[in-house]
Image (cartoon, rainbow, N blue to C red; front, side):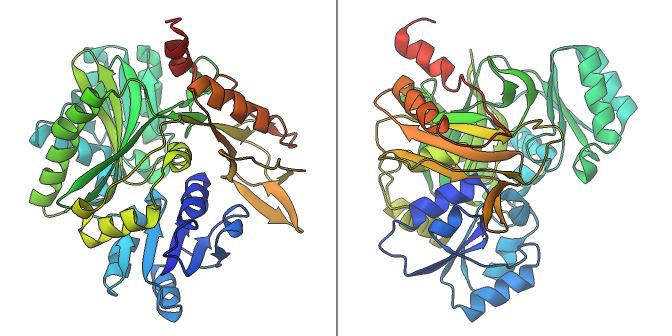
Length: 425
């Protein structure tokens, strides 16, 4: 098969690494890719925002299958454009991608199909949103409705914080994404990420993970796109997975089909495990980043047939097998992230990874032939181990051999699971 992967981040490097292991693969391209992805695929300088250019490339190279990694091209309708040419695509239509593209859309689906989630209201002006917040009190959650690269959510522990978040949205801090705001109840519990392939009619649960969103150790500081993750998430017991499928995933799948937007792709359900059980925080319509990195490390099965079955509507005919060993990834970010940071700082060398280890490139580029950091989140240093503690030790040992002066990381990724393992909760 000839495959094209769309995207350039750490998630896409993890997908590329895993897809390249498939015996079904004959030619593999990535647009635009990154220096890490270049180990596995031929990089092509196609502008992924130019849907016609992507379609033309697919035609010229007789591409059989396209895997769309990030959310922005999906929300913009890239999958629809390629499907119009009769191509097989992994990723939802623009209409179905609204589950991530609009927080309000998702909340409305939850309300219509009795999917457990926090109570909410949608607002298109500041004064009304603020009046609702004052009436509800803190803690409370304020979200920019649209895509804000993981940064449009404020979990406000005080009233002032919540009111400032409303101002940020309506004053343009998140661009068009903040033109509408969703204000919702604060859910108390433990967060988990749950992934499930869906072909519109069938759903195949994949794996669970736990992300560390806050920039500082002990889960302090501002929210980021994710500073590290591990899989599986101990809080997602077999019973919790079963409840999530029955109470959240299946009604969503049914609701999307009934709404005329059948969902084909990966459901990434951000969950809060409360005293009542699993509740939906939000949906994403692509693999998580950095959760994808730990999931690919644990996936035993060939990824390509799983994604193909999703695109072809034959998901009921395949299965996914997983390694029991946990995997853990640590994000190395540019100093200053998620605020302003210096770009094009030199990465002098990366360590050779052993078995069950991998350094995924998330925000790297080449400048005059030398590796540089081009993004906020730059490297995902990943390892597996017999326990989460062992996976953590291996990941940090690998990370400490990275030579990049402008990088920083959290040193406590996996702390919740390790507390459970050692019984020190």
